[in-house]
Length: 67
Image: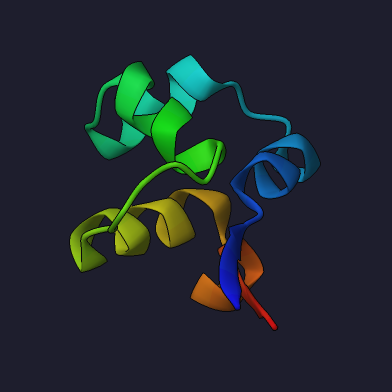
């Protein structure tokens, strides 16, 4: 079982760069990269909320549970 992060897919769909998104939500580009690659151990609800707001999506569009 794993949680798959589809952040790169959402960013491509919305045509937004990592640097621009990171600046808009107030995190470093390095931390956004960690989220994009799925290497993050956790994500704050405030960060998830900011991502959803900027990308105009739902949390389930970014995070996916796979067995």
